[in-house]
Length: 197
Image (cartoon, one colour):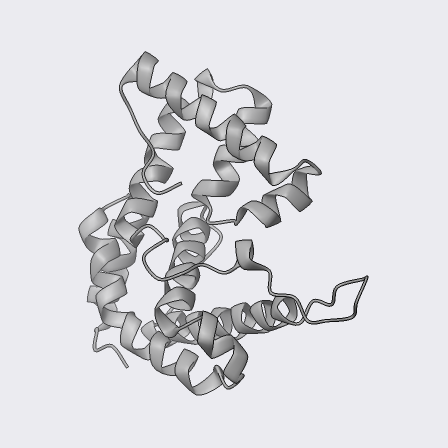
């Protein structure tokens, strides 16, 4: 378990809430070994192990954590509380991925893999990049239409295209094109770019 006294822990979380990227990277460095160990212990399905590894799930869990803490949804009294929450997030993520992996095709009853929902190693932005994207989103919100903002918020929060498609009831391809147009406009108007979305 990461060795932080209460003062160090409180200071680290305060810096993360303030958008400090170094603090976000430090939290990942401290908690990633425990998270990945938990994932490896629980990722027992051989078929899933071929498409996912501990890095994939860890990045997804940390992206969700940073989104929730930025929104003020999380409060912790002790370092152990944070570790407990991260372990629960890992378990929830693995249950979710297992369900998706076992989706059945309505036509032939064969197990289908939801490829779009699987985050391959190297595809996810680093936690510090997630924080930077969130800060940038706050800056550009006034320039976005409701539809543009919805897509961008979901992507910054770490949702996959298939999940956004389900939430907004639009095709993933149409949503990808909308985000590409939004990004191009933001680059042209403000010379800003969201990374890894």
